[in-house]
Length: 177
Length: 128
Image 1 (cartoon, chains in turn orange, blue):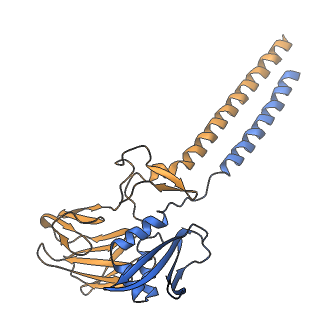
Image 2 (cartoon, one colour):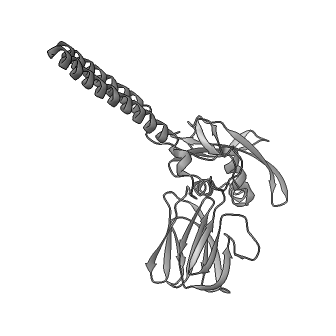
Image 3 (tube, chains in turn blue, red):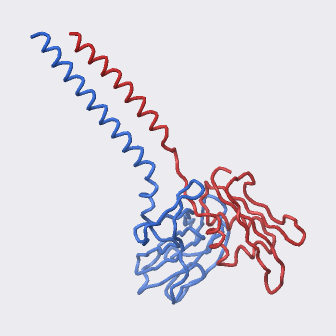
């Protein structure tokens, strides 16, 4: 009897230990694979590499900031018919009141400061308020909301299997505007 | 109790194996991943407009740097050199010259109605 009890106990202990080992191996492999392929999951929404900030300093002055000195185009929109544009290297000071829209364009980045609601739809490119569809990136203003149209397509809207490819040891999007 | 003792020792060995396996797998996970467009894409986008050409032909290296900063992530490194093919001299050199990624070159024919070829060499990478 004692012999049987010993066998049963050892079998249960070893079974539990072996099951936990298998679970651990599967969890580790899953974690590693998921982390290494996370890059493909992360780029499912528009992401601009250049971050731009528009800060109101007071006295009808804004400052455009970026991490490094960056060449930017600034469009200040007072109303549908009244706007002006300029270009500068950040940090740059721009004149504009609190009710104005201030839209800053870098080559791969957009900063928007929302202003008074604008009636209808307004397409703002780096040089002007455009009538036709400009070269992306650009901003579409509707009322007090806006949509950024990036100069690349995100993974979900790309067609075809070759969305990404490996080049130089890095994952690169296969199709960009 | 011999079998129980054996199974306890086997469990200990399995636990040590699992810990070693987990640590060795986790060490294979990269700490951070960088993704960027290749040099051709970046130069192609820059040459769509005339800011880079203006900076090159006015010999303004600060402006060249600011233009490249407006298209690249701030943690990425780049190297850009402007060479005059007529004299084989380097006119502008910005960025990290120690970068090891592949280099592309583009020759601009001229500016403002004049023929004045300038060759741009460009590469982008991480931690150059």
